[in-house]
Length: 430
Ligand code: MLT
Image (cartoon, rainbow, N blue to C red; front, top):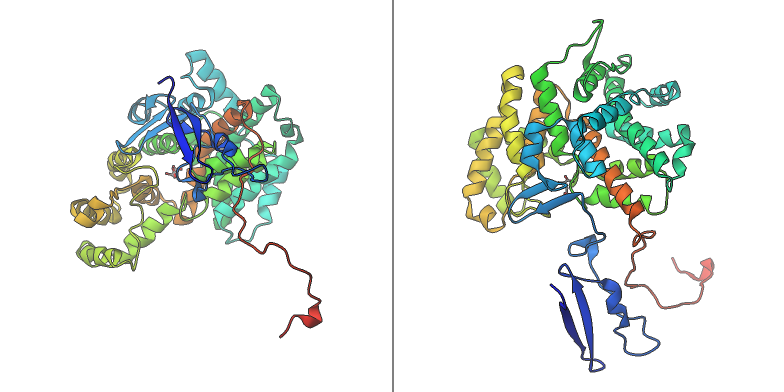
């Protein structure tokens, strides 16, 4: 709407300011003019954890948390999950449009030809302890790629950026698979360019002595769908880190490693591991009511429920719930699913959860599928990081191309001492 704006009356100075609005948003810098005098710094906004602050304009992902809507570049997640491959969606997320046949062919070919790791990267991985957490290995190894590709530092060159995008999307499954095999002491398996993105990942994870790995097509498709669902999620914690680190013009390998580090926390990508721990702790359906009571008493958390943005069912959780059936036809039913379904049923009928608008999120069901596929829980966040790499790179590119973006540098409200004189150590007391 044109001429949209606010009139703000500063009661301190009895001055009225006209502040324009754009898409329902006030520009924080427009508030700086609101001052008590020339010495005053001007008004700032205070928003710990950015709960009500837009840090950028973005055309990548749209979420309506109240309605439970998720779209990449305008396409509903349900349609993409049903009709696309992960690499097609990765192209869409990064480039903004669905690829034509020839664009997709080139994209897949480029990414496929960047799946191999430099042999020194294998040696680097060999330096980790046998029981190293795969996510720690993943983060460090992605960062270490920066030493192999120093050309990546030229982030202002679109051609250079494109090459790093191929490299990163191509190499993250290889790194992920190597972190997995490292834990078992198995030799690392080279990528197989005949296979699809998900099938090749399965090959690098699970191929043993057979000359050619044949992936189960239902499992490969389920993995591809999970990848599609995790490709991007607008300004989540790790995307914000990617943009923030990238804003200093650090290369995309270290920026991606930083984003993956943010993802590794139990409040972000590590959440599905916590869901499995919770389901294990509950143990059986008859113990659910007692667990729910403990949640209400604030003694434990209902993991996998609630989301900063969704105040409705996370649309990704619904798709995963459906895909679980296809996986279990191959793997056999994971008994945790029955506990999860019952937990969901009880929670969604319970006034306590309904009032708080706590619905299952993507993490509630993903761990159950991953476990049925044979992954140990400490691989779950790595499985999230593989597809999210496309989202991080899209956010990074968009940030670098946005003329309004600068190095990220929030302000603070200083609460420390104003000034005090140095005290020599012998006078500082006991
Ligand atoms: C994500 O997919 O990144 C998570 O749901 C977290 C978020 O969006 O805040």
